[in-house]
Image (cartoon, rainbow, N blue to C red; front, top):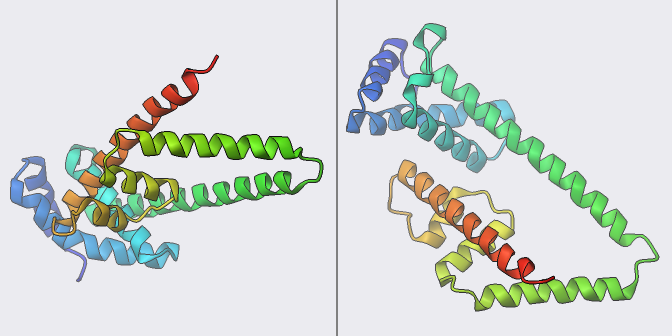
Length: 199
């Protein structure tokens, strides 16, 4: 799909500012694919990362369109740059995580670690897993949590677990985010129960 023309963008932005219900769907249809393509080319990332970043940025824009100033440039450029920045942040975060894991791995491989320490860590992990299995989480939430703990970032993978494939992409992104936030709050409470009951 070709990038929308400037005058089309201005008209669409005005309608989104007026909170027209159809305008967000039209904006998504007009902008998503071109932004995804531009981000993928510029950042050399996967299609999934480019798509997820684009959806995140579009949702943010739909929720607060007044942040965009048409006097400072085109809507397409504004959204594309935001999506590129999002992917860059993810890439930096992934690199930092990899460095941390490598450092941790090097520490663990150092000689002199007591077998007792390794056994205690294994026992702790086993206890936490058992507590999760005994918790009030339903099967869907457990599957969602498992994906989170595996470091999954693909919105479509989470949507599959939630049974949301039939929804529009914007709604899928919103529901996945809502569920992720809910599970994170549950994890915080769970952590307090597991570790807060020991003195």
